[in-house]
Image (cartoon, rainbow, N blue to C red; front, side, top):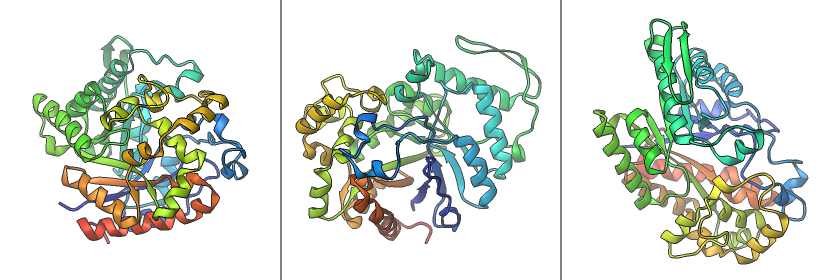
Amino acid sequence: MSIELAGFLRTTLPLDLSRLADFDSGRYGYVWMPDHLVSFWPDAIWTPEFTDLAEMSHSPHRYLDTFTLAGAVAASTERVRIATSVVDTVRRHPVMIAQAALTLSHLSKGRFILGLGSGEKTNIAPYGFDFSHAVARFEEALQVIRALWDADAPSDFDGRFYRLEHARLDAELYDGRPPPIWIGASGPRMLALAGKYADGWWPTGSDGPAEYATKLAVMTRAAEDAGRDPSSIVPAKMVVCLLGEGDELREMLARPMIKSLGLQLTAESYRRRGRRHPMGDDWQGIQDLEPEFPSRERLIRFFDEVDVDSILASVPHGTPKEVAQDVAALHDVGARVVSILDYSGMAGQEFAVRSAQKVRETEDEILRLMGGAP
């Protein structure tokens, strides 16, 4: 089976929509749009002391609203499918998610995909949202969304987190079909929910082929247990990688922003590779990051302690041809849609200017190896 590419559209300022024509050219099956209030880079690292990228942008947290931008993308394209990757069900009430997704489905003439997840602490805790019972809340939000889309009369719902009483969403589905729901999931409970409810699936984190296959198997079993056809669920993967030749990689890995990639990896992912995470045995990666944590002092200690070989062991790296081979291994175990996110641009301005071309070359090699749109 051939593979489909997904383009990645940054939702930060300065906003750049210049690639929409390319995304809509037929080369890409999807355009993925993240939904954040803040990034995964602590404030203490976003200074000229650590990166010259801070000279170009005063903050890494200049995010715009993803649903609003998705409307602009829908109005400016005709063929590419548009997906949020992913909206969490803590910051947005499921009724409003259901209405927004339905609106975008009509704007895009059925091309919109609602990507959902249970959330990350960094986008939730600073704003006073309740992050407790996130997975249980997520499942109930899914049930509310589906109930509103499926109902032909006002809906009642009496749950632990949400309550509807004669609630209505009378705008009809576009072409009679609800927007597909793709779920970001890695843990066993979320994978089970993906198997039960999802039309597509993303794992979070830096899974290699073996880990990806294991999680796909868990989701597949959950789909079968729910009486669903697992082949109806599209397996996808955002491939975070470091693109560069050997000398270039070594130079990147000396830069603090590249070393900070280790902060996004969990202690468990380190243990699987026979290593110990410098942030401790309970470190949960992106779930433990906040704009003001870690502190500058802790980050400096982390940069001294981090083993860059651990980063290389966790993410695909090398030339476009080498990374394409890693993607081929993911495809062999079931991935059908991939987006290439080159982290090397975070090494600094000199690397950032070359990143887009390296991603293009990687995509070309992927298409050559596995087939797909020209």
